[in-house]
Image (tube, rainbow, N blue to C red; front, side):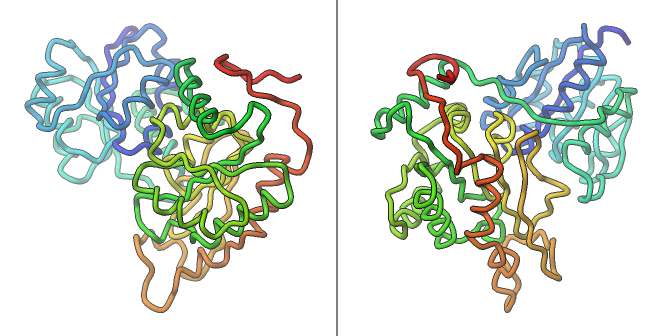
Length: 352
């Protein structure tokens, strides 16, 4: 099939959607002249919009029949499901799309024409998705990375926020992403973030900006109340695309295992992920400038939302501000002078 019309069900979470980038790149290389459409929920649409190789984005409806109605007339030859949701699988079966590929389980297997069991969590999520492409003869890349296209409008949004926050174009910034929707077993402690902030501001010429959604606003306040120098609160004040643009202007990002961690890796900012109950072999940030800290304890990884009684989040407590500061300083070269400056409302950072 030289010119297939392909529909891909995008993952439902921000970080997973970012990690689908290598899959999209791989099928685009394999079917260079094919048509690639992506079925996506609204919250991950900005990710897909900035992903190279996508020809069309289709809004996902809430029922199998609604999804089928959205896809009807697309004359699709092939369907890949990168989600655990069964509704798109039902929809594509109703439409009799000839090739339907995905992971078995959850009632999906009976409706798929090609399927494999979910892979172990010792294999990175991005390679889980690529394994589905391999079922249709797509070569597996040796190296994988994620990318994000920062648009001029996104940069304008980020720079406008910096100006409103009283920052000049020469201010060096390190971003903190203290949130994680999964639960407290993936969230480093507010006091630890504050201790790291004091190390960064006290030993380098960097300011701290806290990024995240509105749900992280209280954490930003709690961290700021414990620091010697004020932090800049960007939680809930930028779109996903604007947050990505802001990260692209930062010296570095320190993040829990979350969607923003993957966003940082994709835009190319030095990104350090902090892992508690989860496994970096499964969800480490991708990219040349990424790293992670995982202080394993006997029960790691437990994949729990909250810690077992008596354990007191030992995996997170062993990550100290000093350990994190040492690693992010080396990754982002925080202690070395930086000669870049932000040129307002242009699409890049110029070295002077």
